[in-house]
Image 1 (cartoon, each protein chain N blue to C red):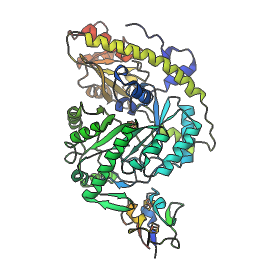
Image 2: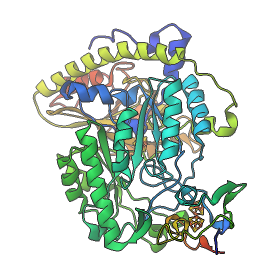
Image 3: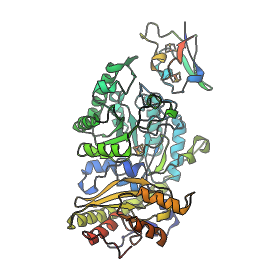
Image 4: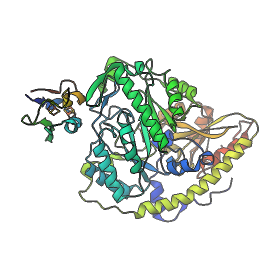
Length: 491
Length: 64
Ligand code: SF4
Ligand code: SF4
Ligand code: SF4
């Protein structure tokens, strides 16, 4: 494989180093994005998703998102939600995000944009509903757009107030909306939503669920008609809506949903939610996988959205939110566009290169003969490259190479082998367990000792492809070994 | 004739503030508070008290 034409990491400027140094692997974006390859994406759609780490699997290597919790008011009650904490629709249940006023949010966004040049998306998610608590949502977007014109906006909503806001969303250039849709049958909805507040009164039971369902479908259709991309989140509640989500997938696909993301119910009595207290359990990993496999082929599935905090800041799995809490942000901040612009130029060039390398690599894999499937676990800190040391990886990105090409499968979290609190031995066992099913590990560097132990566990690890593009490395190994399971030359 | 908010239960979501037709609810210090002189119990405007209908915490917006 040819060496990359430009290596961001080899750029001699400390600026380039600094930019890429902040990239960490594994995050929302990485895992929750669409894994559509650039070469088979409609150009108009690509234009919309290309900088959005949650909508594009490719973009997650380069861009960061942040959420601000500015709209705490909500118009429905979900049985998996306790309002003391974040909205479980899109965020991690059981954590409380910092509520901000639109002015505080503006200062926070500027402070982040000055420090994190990868920032491309500002989202407003729960606690609360961005469409219902609309004045605050709108004020936040308007203020930020004035200061940072090229930032993209997205919101997530339960859908009830969505139809009232679609025109304004379109006017404000919000081109991504996430709707949480857990049912299309009001009888099932009644088990998930105890009440809604609509048209100045409270509705309960099947009537409440029916209104919510109708408004969700109407809102989705309106967004599709205006070319606004939609991601549907569904919370998988075993025994309540798990089977039913196959039908939900069909409905949302028919109405133009771009992505469908299945999220496991996170249920814990300590969160004080109805489900938590009543002992409703969440699905296990195997149940999730089985369901995802069954809805595959419907609206594109997002694999492993990480359910970030509503005040999350950063790339992929990282959350730098704690560096930017309101009390750490000065009263006056001025936006400095230079870092972000420089970063964007760097990325534009690197991405052209990556896209080309990637389609070449995928072509080679498709052409390779004996058609078996091989799972690769990659240690990366961003940029789409094999560029993290084995011992420093907090998670591995898993890719599958098969006659269908190369696809992103998800991430596996691990305890850092080098820095783990426990003995290296115990940690390595943990890493090996987390890599179950993986055939080959790609990383920037690995010592002989862990390499041997991985080999004993049947996993081949190599650093021979350090700093190559992930797909390039995968295709080199796949085409060289297709048929024979030998990687001895590099291992 | 007025409603009140049990401050210790309020999550500060602010929904009651913007639903109140009488502008009777304001954020004061730790929680939202109903100004009893302004509260009309939504009489003549809506069938149900808006604050109590939207509040996510049971028995938090209650008759004073
Ligand atoms: S919750 Fe996190 S992972 Fe999921 S879509 Fe939002 S930012 Fe992405
Ligand atoms: S009862 Fe009606 S008027 Fe009184 S505070 Fe509540 S919403 Fe306002
Ligand atoms: S609606 Fe209830 S929880 Fe929300 S601010 Fe009003 S009193 Fe507090």
